[in-house]
Every structure is written in C-alpha cells, then in structure tokens.
Image 1: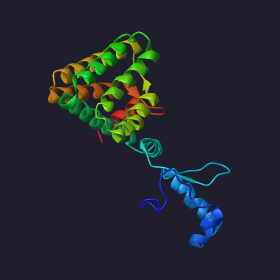
Image 2 (image 1 turned 45 degrees about the vertical axis):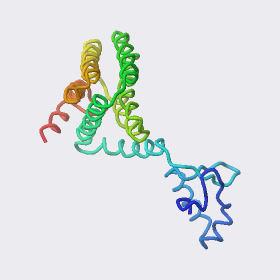
Image 3 (image 1 turned 120 degrees about the horizontal axis):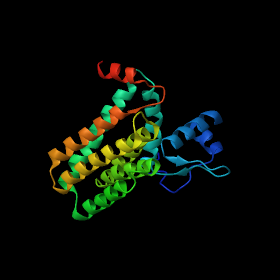
Length: 224
C-alpha cells in the first residue's frame, strides 16, 4: 500500500487499532510488521504518534550493510573476502574518477590530498584525512548509493583495523599511494588509476590486522 502510493511519503498510517481491524490480525502482528517497515526505511516510529511514511535512503542501506559486515568478518576467510570486496570497490571508484572527474572535482581531490599530506606526522588526524580522501572519490560519482556503500565498507574497515608496523612509515607509504592515485586521475589515465589504487589497498592489507586476527591467520587465508 505504501509502494502503490495509497499511503504517501509524509503522511501517517492508521493507528495500530485500525490496522488490526483492516488486516484482521492481532496487535502483536501489527507491531512486528511496523518494526520491519521501520527497519527497511518505509516508516518512522515516534512514541505517542502514528507511524509516518518515509522513503528508504542510503542510511538504511548503511545500517543493514554494517550489520551483515560485522557477521561476515567473524567467519572463516571473512576478513580476506572483505578486503577483496573493498579492493574491487575502491579500484572501480578510481577508474571511474579518472574517466569522469571534472576540473572542480579534481581540485577537491587535490585539497583532500594536501590535507592528508599535512597530517602524516599525526596518526589520529592522518586516519581522518585518509578517510576523507577516499570519501571524495566516492562523492565524485554523485551517486548516494555508492556513497552509502563506501561509508559502510571502507570507513568501517579502516576504523576497526589495527596497525602492526611503524605508524609514521605507514602514513608516508599511504600518502604516497594516494598521490599516485591522484596523479593518474588528474591525467585521466583510468588504467593507471586502477593499478595505483590496487597497489595502495594491497599494501594497506599487509600492514593491518583486525581484532583477534593473527599474521599467521591472514597468511593462511590468503593461501586458501
């Protein structure tokens, strides 16, 4: 009924009592259905008011993806599979940016790169500017779904991973990877942008572990 437009975005659904009569079910069934609709982004529940019809947005996708991601990461080869997905996603973003980025978008990416360079010696701030550089790449697509997937994928992984080497040297190498990606995008060389990002993500995967993961476990996963 929501999808058909009978209940439009911004309007309220009937009360729980009315819904039990309309569908001839108990109140517990109605509440369960409403909670499901809220989880999928179709309604917003507010205490003391009838459910309000909303439109699913990327935030709904992010929440659902994050729940799935955390479960997958605990499974055998989960971390390896997650790294592979992130590499595919980030490399595709770099390829797309090299082919489609406007002059203004390239300038925005250059600003993000400069801010990344300025924080190399400050590990906490570097992580923030690292994320920002990759986020600008996702924003280049002007696609809210892609941006939502990026938030759930790249950001979640980067926040959870644990550095196992020297932070300063890692930051220098990471910045160098960003620089190579930027140069390829600026030159509109899509193949070089893809390769640069692939090298950058692969290097990062070798420098970080996740909680409760060991280097031996990572090697075993990579070797199948």
